[in-house]
Image (cartoon, rainbow, N blue to C red; front, side):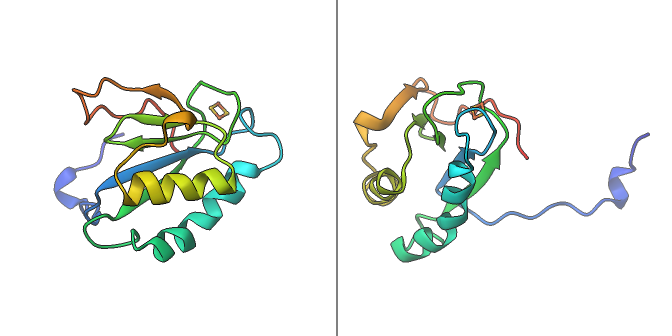
Length: 127
Ligand code: FES
């Protein structure tokens, strides 16, 4: 079955500087810690002034990145930075130092995409 694209409404999306993807799947955290972190993002982004404007950060839950250890884990694109052990305190550091200050939090990084390919997307299953 195919849709006639001429009849479809094109989706809209606001501009953003960075996209934060957090895994809320069942294997990198066991007790809903990642979902709980995700639910605080709107308020924390607003407090940090990154919910709109030049530094706006878009946020999305994913089902699994296939790196299911030591969560919560998250990915910041287009920077290609992957973080683990994103506790509440570590999340605040990531917001203050990386998303606002532009300096990744080195000790929480478990993977970097090639820095020359900053627009490389995460491999992910979005939910
Ligand atoms: S369940 Fe989170 S990375 Fe797989």
